[in-house]
Image (tube, rainbow, N blue to C red; front, side):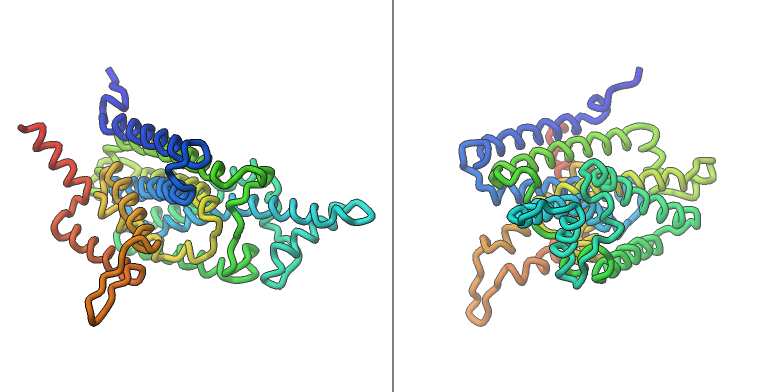
Length: 390
């Protein structure tokens, strides 16, 4: 008899339960819908952290389980943010333009409104016309569909070209990094249609909900992020728990042998690559409205390298390890770079953590690689086995 997912992987139920408890507690303590003990800024940090945990799961699925070290998954994360950001910025600007034209003697025409929107959004890059890629920007449903379709199609085409050519190992990693760099450099151009280096801003303002305080909106996004993380974890656990999961692990360990046994290796890799790209895009679509802004720097190759570091620190090949790694690094980064960490005076020099945080992160990665190659998740597994043995 086929056992349920929770029976095959008890850790999944534990993770979902802990996530649910954490979410409820934070909502109850929040300023927006609770007793006000947790600030809105902290709720936003936690919501963004949950989104980063979701993309870390995607990275662990493609790298930790399938063996594809992708250094380009933050490109899909950023594309998801751009797709939803286009609707948020367009509709918010539309409301502003309509309000500014309302005082005229004659009602504003649709063309005047459209010209006003174009000038408001693209005047910063010397333009006034709305580019073709913004054709569906006034439709929330269409932009939500594009959150999935654009990164998914990019991953499908890129993966098909790379995998059918049997590019593997470090060469595949270089290709994914090159894809990310090319996309980032394109978006930096003012004529890309996405405002170049200025990016999309004001994303924290939800059209039609301007009267709702940010304290409430932040809780809504926090809940959406928690729900997406729980759903993404369940999907990833289901993928790796059955026959499909066994095959992709085998591809990771010995790709040539699996191909010799008759399995369509390229198809398995393409499915995982595309699925994880979509998961990353959904995470980005939830992250950037909480961040309030997105620009091409977010898609730079270094971001995808950081993502691999998070998963390595947490323990690749363990879904909860990816979550632990992303959450740990994200929260520590917010603490060190947000001014909460006290500077250390050494007499001849003062250690300012805003400047030294990345050095500390790199040192942590080296130490984990040398002394805990299975990451924090591996240390947790070791403790559990000790308790079980005793």
